[in-house]
Amino acid sequence: MPPKPLDLVSINENVKKAQYAVRGELYLRATELQKEGKKIIFTNVGNPHALGQKPLTFPRQVVALCQAPFLLDDPNVGLLFPADAIARAKQYLSFTSGGLGAYSDSRGIPGVRKEVAEFIQRRDGYPSDPEFVFLTDGASKAVMQILNTIIRGEGDGIMVPVPQYPLYSATIALLGGTLVPYYLEETANWGLDTNELRKSVSEARYKGLNVKAMVIINPGNPTGQCLSQENLREVLQFCYEENLVLLGDEVYQTNIYQDERPFISSKKVLMDMGPPLSKEVQLVSFHSVSKGYFGECGQRGGYFEMTNIPPETVDEIYKVASISLSPNVPAQIFMGLMLNQPKPGDISYDQFARESKGILESLRRRARIMTDGFNSCRNVVCNFTEGAMYSFPQIRLPPKALEIAQQAGKAADVYYCLKLLEATGISTVPGSGFGQKEGVFHLRTTILPAEEEMPAIMDSFKKFNDDFMEQYDDHRGYSRL
Image (tube, rainbow, N blue to C red; front, side, top):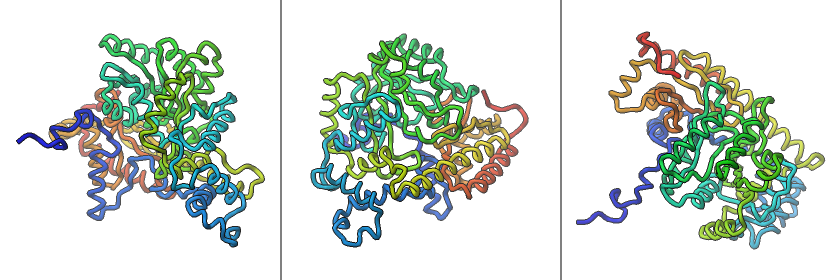
């Protein structure tokens, strides 16, 4: 009897090729242990509210009123909601064709797209056209939409930083393209070297690949570095010379924990460079409500802005977006609220500023606690988390641990992370899920656990790690850079 269409042997081979380590073997084991009653600290995914971050009051008030517009007719609404939240809710409802239960335009609500464009113009000092802004169900869907437009087959290559966020490797595999890695330099604080870029693209073209796009993640995931203005200029010059579209993943742009390298958008640097680059380099930039101090991961709101993309291509992207009818409408309103916040003098401004500042200041302290904690551990080295939400320490595993992991049929960092999970309940992601140099091992953890819990978590990690190293260290040296 022939296999059925949805039997494993019959399904799309690209589905089987796609891997997503953030919710892979470690995560599945963590959920099993949780069902058995073990306390699990899920640091495997950047999910702030799941780890105790409180939602900001003002955006939730506005969306609550939009979700339940009958409250606006209640004579007591002013006792429960501030006047500026009421006014914003009425404004957003006026943007829709039937409230939050109605489809919007497939590109997103025009009034919110206008807010996005105005935010970009304020941020960068250059005009932004709402017609080149699409709202999406989170930045991940935006990335998938653009990669789907770029990739025609396995001969098309996409340059991706390694270590990389596995959204990229999984999506490229799913769409049948080819990932072209370029390695970040750990000893230079995960810096980006243009010589490495040229080497990477040359090797790919030698193999017959048509390299079409380059991805940057700034601030970095999983590596947490912030790209300098000079680095961004070099990247844009490289894309101009090599005829690549630059995909700028900028979802962590407000997650900055140092003052030396503030976030600068790819769009601003490109426009600052002037013609011919500012007129010719194709750029797609991504942002999300899931990160920053909003942390609204479950709302699934995102956008992408296109620069120097031909209108006829934009029409094709619109056509494909129309297949899904409409992005999530409440999430579009969250995006508008994130980019058009209460201003000084507004009733809600002081509370909003206090809440958002408190979250960012705490994250800055947690970044330092975690980095210092890792660097106090035996055979562990960790660059400071300059931005984003993660630490990516290198674990220098003794040869005996490598042998035991091999005997167990596990990658060495997977073996370490599983042992860590079972001993401490700390759920991380092995570095092999993001890509790393041969013979070098890492793990990624978020910096999101509650600040008051962080010292105990790092103490627990240190005890496990030092016991692990004592058990496996036979003084023959370590696997390291």
